[in-house]
Image 1 (tube, rainbow, N blue to C red):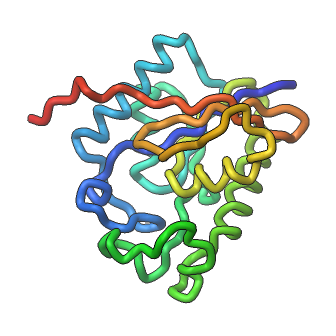
Image 2: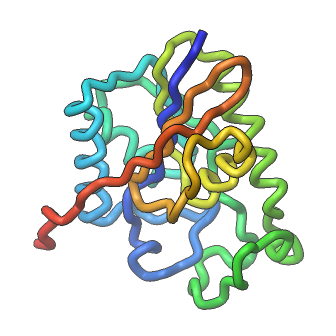
Image 3: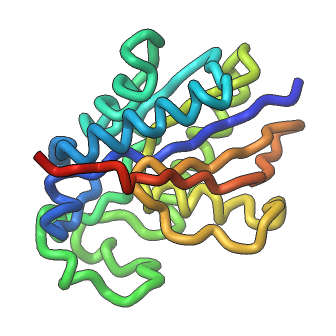
Length: 197
């Protein structure tokens, strides 16, 4: 059976706004982050996309985003394997301290994960969830680094040239068939209607 995966990043958080390194540490959604999740929810509604199953990273920012997107009407499972890259002792520090991309093994020395570990963790987690899910349409809310590394694990199957930057509430749409993921589309949103109170 062919299934569709909508893999989505959480909305803007306080740490995003303050340019703090945010992996396994957590920060609440900002008012803009809440609005972004509402816009993403409206996108699914307008496109008449409904979900048979939903999963979220255990981080609060991802859970809150999923609950806003689905209007709290869809039961979901929290899964540790969908968490962001673990940045070790760099967690919560200024993004100015990040090394140049690609990070590769940089954070391992500081108690974090390597790029390969993130890719393998997310690939194994998402594959298992999609194999076990009975429905055809699945929503997962995760994080920018985790999503990009998962997508790169299936680069040979991309139906497009570039992944681009994982924006807040951006969506990667995959077709899942015969244990293979095919990246079909990167979906962004227009947040220009946002007005800060």
